[in-house]
Amino acid sequence: MGSPPLIFLKHNIIYLKVFIIFFLTSVPNITNLRPNQSLATLKVQRPPSLNSTNIVSSLETLSLDGYFSFENNHHAAKDFGNMYHFLPSAVLHPKSVQDISNTIRHIYEMGSASELTVAARGHGHSTQGQAQAHQGVVINMESLQKLEMQVHTGKTPYVDVSGGELWINILHETLKHGLAPKSWTDYLHLTVGGTLSNAGISGQAFQHGPQISNVYQLEVVTGKGEVVTCSEKKNTDLFYGVLGGLGQFGIITRARISLGPAPKMVKWIRVLYSEFSIFTKDQEQLISSENSFDYIEGFIIINRTGLLNNWRSSFRPKDPVQANQFSSDGRTLYCLEVVKHFNPDDTKTVNQSMENLLSKLSYIPSTLFLSEVPYVEFLDRVHVSEKKLQAKGLYEIPHPWLNFFVPKSRISDFAEEIFGNILTDTSNGPILIYPVNQSKWNNKTSLVTPDEDVFYLVAFLTSAMPSSTGTDGLAHILTQNKRILDFCATAELGIKQYLPHYNTQEEWQAHFGPRWKVFAQRKLAYDPLAILAPGQKIFRKATRTS
Ligand code: FAD
Image (tube, rainbow, N blue to C red; front, side):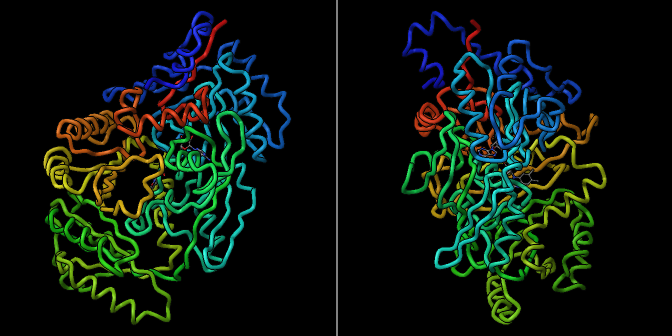
């Protein structure tokens, strides 16, 4: 199936005579970044043409609770990836859902006379310009945070939050009631709308599914400007479409998130393996065990001599003497990271349960490291690293990340090539790897996953040193990423990209596979002019020149 705008035109031959479709002009050349292209060539786009300026100024006529800014919008042309910079024509700072609805309806009613597209921007932590809109309108969703959070206690507790709310704020608010969301991301300074447009995955996902499997209801503004409440029972198609829908069908303005009892403390454990197969066998056993850990992740350590010494500031070795004798010697090691929740009055029970679970694992005995921290400290752990990197000026640098879902049956083939041949010297950042149970994931959402009961999340969270031409430079890392992607394609591993990014619709069709048809139909139903989330580069807005 072609893009919705094309189909639109096919059905109306008169349109064909009058309009010229500028597929190529709506997405600038900069989107086709080649691996060997240097950072220096990535420039901020020019301001819009005069014609566009007239159209943009029509936005000023809208009556709003919030406001538009037309100048100094460079922050909206940036994201965590620091590789793509598309300057918008305007940024909307909404104070109400109506502001968002009025703006989108206005743009929708202009039809294909305007090139304007709209990107919701959560916390701007995408890596490939997904929350940007070249010469379009960016909606600063965090302005909506002011909508009050409402916690509902009782048998099935939940919290109603704004789509622009940060997960860290939700944690603090729900904890006041002894409750918390069940499923997290590793980093909490991300917005509800941003993670629900993808999936929201962390070490709880094996048990509770991702964040998109833990939502009861959404309020959405569609690409026509309609405000729609949707859930499993009401406007079901839109509800599941939006969850994991990469912002294509509507802007999430409110979400009802499922909650559970929050523990006060966690036992946080790390153990090491030198054999990949033993490491994954243990991980797989843990995610299928009854009364398992509450969080199960893992990461790869490539060439990190002195690693255990670094851990000592936060973890203590179970056996300090043996731990002192352990040397990583630059080997590739695999770290299993697990957590057990507890409250101070059940320490004895939790210790027994933990010992029991650990006794069934085959890690290197001298490498058992433990820590005991408050639940909040554990959940907000990545923020600590963020602050340290910021202090060193190492946060706002390029982040050419790659994330995959790898079927369990192919994880050893994947690891053999990637860690045996491609990433042998260094990884330029953490590499996470952990399995999840598909059965806990709601498969009605827009997210695509491999067709197996168990699959792995593998995340290459790479940082590139600005202006470096060495192995830590952007060009080298992008070449390495391409090798990884090429291998996955040639070896037909059946992987799916998480936080996917592609440049052509053919690639997107291949990504969605048999689910593409439904995805494209939903686009036609909810955003027929392809106004929303242009930075994902899935559909392009059709425009006319005269
Ligand atoms: P943005 O980057 O602002 O937006 C992302 C996309 O969603 C864009 O297309 C945007 O237009 C759209 N969008 C934003 N808000 C809305 C809305 N309200 N309605 C509809 N569409 C919207 N992901 C995980 O799953 N697990 C992790 O552990 C994890 N850790 C991370 C750690 C760091 C340091 C970073 C930078 C990212 C991490 N991510 C993780 C990825 C993260 O979940 C996504 O990049 C997410 O989109 C970022 O949220 P955001 O609020 O910054 O969204």
